Image 1: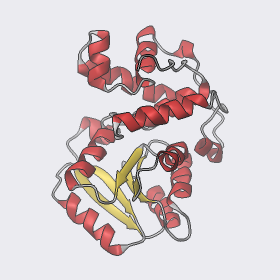
Image 2: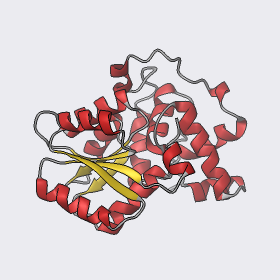
Image 3: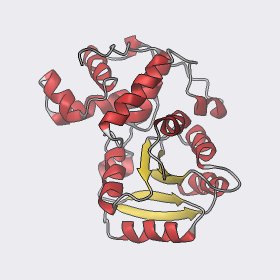
Length: 246
């Protein structure tokens, strides 16, 4: 399943966004911000996690902006439920604190990354576009730190935590399911490399690098680059290189 849905990849229609936050003023602020962006359409607002899960099921957004602290069901639990029912939907967590432990929990729940509540409109929109284009939405340094933390835990169960709720029976992919080039690209993803850096390292075009990343995301059955890395580490598909040098 690709990070770019057929709707966005094949047409000029705006990407569909659901906003989940228990504060009406914050939801209104995000909506007003996105009203100026022609490539996004806010299709719904949820005031708690349970409503977010239900609206997501009904409205089928491409991306959810998910607050964490909400009544009824918090944002992480809602993220796990959404990813279990609709793994193709990307989730960006809205948070007040840039804490690695906290963000690791969000990523394990199925989130593609995070957006700080005090982020500028430019940074928010850029993060959203990067997720939907299969790029890193995270600060690269922090992203690499999170990958190292995940790698240190070693291979986990055959499915990510959020997938257990879906009851999916599909067999996990094997390394043999990937082409030699995709294995190379996967190794670079595990180093936190961007598409541009992957292209430079392999002497290929950025567009070709993006296609390889998209194929990896599809084969791993996830919605975005972040979850592709999480899934690959959980399955032990590629060893994460030890840190070298200073």
